Length: 301
Image (cartoon, rainbow, N blue to C red; front, side, top):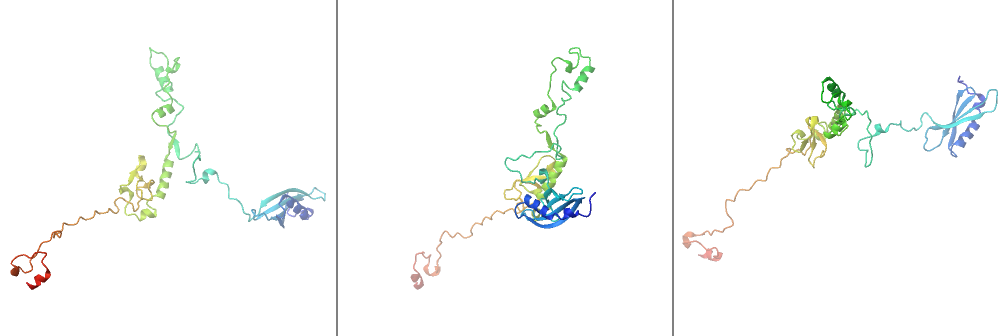
């Protein structure tokens, strides 16, 4: 049973504990004596301040003890332990929880858990023959029920039973090569993530003149997502090449500010390219004045 009062001889063995701590630590890294803790009967731990640069608040703990009815104190253990205000490393988190979008680089591999909720099997019964296969249990029961005169017995009982392939082979032939597809949970999480990045609540969408649903640069998606999302194809938009919500919008909307065509000027009323001679005094000259007539002659006529 642990004693509340430290053993007197063990508690007085401070110098012995310091020597043990200095032997385990680097020179000059053991500080002042901090406390004495009674661990059990005739078992005491002496705590010394650690001066290690990277171990702020840590303490050297040296445990000493003595045998019953003995006066010789010996060292049991020397270890560096964190104190109440010690600088500790953050709690370890699995890599799958530390991974963030954009962390993957060229050559990196991201294994997917077999029980990932975002995925579900693309087809089931991969190791079981299809129901219409000659080696399937359903076909064998059907043949046994019929009165077959040409080939008595089930196809499975024949010497060379024809094999039509498994479900995996049929899926491969039909182009369904994906063993797993996106589940409803994965679909919803992706939609929430896209709506948060390029959705109606973003500052860009709040200041947009119109939504993407009426934009000519929107490329709709296929499947169930086409009802809420599309891909932006405007190279000047901040969402170019991104999946955007139909409620998203930006200043690059195709119908936001249609540039009007420059107006075509009207034809001139007076043709200034041709000079028409005008008579200054038709009553005096009796005719038109030539355009090359000097001004002095016109003034004295």
